[in-house]
Amino acid sequence: MKISHLLLAALLCSSAAPVASAATVTVEAAKKAAPISRIDPTFWWVGMKNPKLQLLVHGPGIADSKVALAAYPGVTMDGFQRLESPNYLLINLTISPEAKPGKLKLSFDGKNKTKYEYELRARETDKGRVQGVNSSDFIYFLMPDRFANGDTKNDVIKTARARTIARDSMYARHGGDLKGIEQHFDYLKSLGVTAIWPTPVVENDMPKASYHGYAMTDYYQVDPRYGTNEEYVQFVRNAHKNGLKVIHDVVLNHVGSHNYLFLDQPAKDWFNRWPSFTRSNYNSQALNDPYGSKRDLDLYNRGWFDTTMPDVNQSNPLVATYIIQNFLWWLEYTGLDSYRIDTYPYSDPQFLMAWNKALLDEYPQLGMFGEAWVGSTAQQAFFAQNIFEPVDGFKSNLPGVLDFQSQGAIWDALKEKGNVTKLYDALQGDWMYQDATRNVVFMDNHDMSRVYSVIGESLPRLKMGFAWLLTTRGIPQLYYGTEILMKNFSNPDGLVRSDFPGGWKEDKRNAFTQAGRTPQENEAYEYVRTLGTYRKTHPVLQTGKLMQFIPQDNIYTYFRYDDQGNTVMVMLNGNDSEKSVDLTRFAERLNGYSAASDIMTKATVSDLKSVKIPGYTALVWELKK
Image (cartoon, rainbow, N blue to C red; front, top):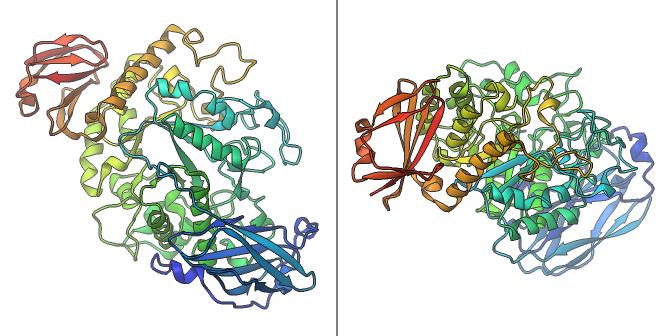
């Protein structure tokens, strides 16, 4: 059954409908001694715009209970629902606007009679929470486990499935945590960074290689090796106090195979099932191919991402509601600013529209961008708000995506004998988006080779990349360590996820400091710092219009400008030799200006008729009247 974004309220108040069959109780679930092991969401709030709340109750044999709610002004129980597993119950509540904070008293009358007090909290009143991210921001993307270890007490959790720290292993935990990130807020701010994007911080209690965060085992818990839930709340608050936003990385499509909902499944259709393990075909074209087959579509949407990552059945309305409520919960609980959605196109299309709508209805200012690693600009635009007609009832309502098209283009432009025309082509396709400035632009990330290695460890060409990143349209994202020339090829991917030098007390050098960096590393760092801080204080590079000119002689020129007369000219020379450029071709943007200031060198430019630009160099000029 497909779920429409218009049916969310109906899904949240579905009536009781017992199911006859029962799932096998796992050994792990049978060991639970308490009648109720947990209720999700763990607590809720009064005053939410959507008054409906679905509680998922888990406990051994809890399904044989009848549920009653003691009288509570403003709260009514619409019914309870049994699932296939005897260890689950769903309770549907309506919380009216008149309800006050307090504790709901629930009683369960079955073989094991029990009572439970469910907390309703008051919503936060701070209007500075959930700020969103936009083109005024500069994102720093990092892996918490590999960035800095600020609290050695949480390195080893005795109850975890993986209980070792081994920094010499690319697959083991290294000990980085939230406190380590927090201790380096000043470093991030020195670069002009305004938003932090860590890989997922939720619990990943998998036996091995769980450091990356994309195999979630508990929807409602921060991984204890990063910190506690309350420490994450404090992390967001402290980030905000430091002028830094927080982006919460989420996975909608799948979970880790040690997630309690998979070990003891509420129902057979909670996850997508196949007669034997069936992997996704990883081809999003199946979603909108007018000649496509149903098999290809099923493989893409319902196939598993990996053997240890069960694919969640979001077309089940109960599952959809569970997931939607979870991400509303994190927003209200922490006040985070944006969601980055992993493997966005793999999820059920109707669910994606419902998820986006529910979150934006409750938090209109929320930032959202998704990973759509696809092969063309048109396919990428398909997953963002675009100008296209709906396809099979799907029209994306996601504000923005990670711009893999411009990422591929910057690689092509920066390689030896590269082609800067690819940058022009990547932006020419922006007509397909409702607003391409909501896309996140980047040069590399944790899933691909580091850009410095890809371009032959050429610092001049990397500086050209930095210039493009911080002056083009959209929201720039820098992968941790690129500013200090961290390198390697993704073969395997652990090689591009190395520890940031200086993040551990025992490190021989501290690249967070000038003294701990080599001269070349300091040159790269200073380039990012200069341009990043300039961008932060000059809105023309944040929200200004963009005009680009068709590249000639492998030189790409574009302008950022606004209605107040502020203009920045950017020129990238993709050749290995100096070129002389006649600037009269750019008269429609240069007319009215008599000089320029080089943002990087601070030199004054008095001749705007021609320029000699060295090989593999970026000119970034602020035009003067």
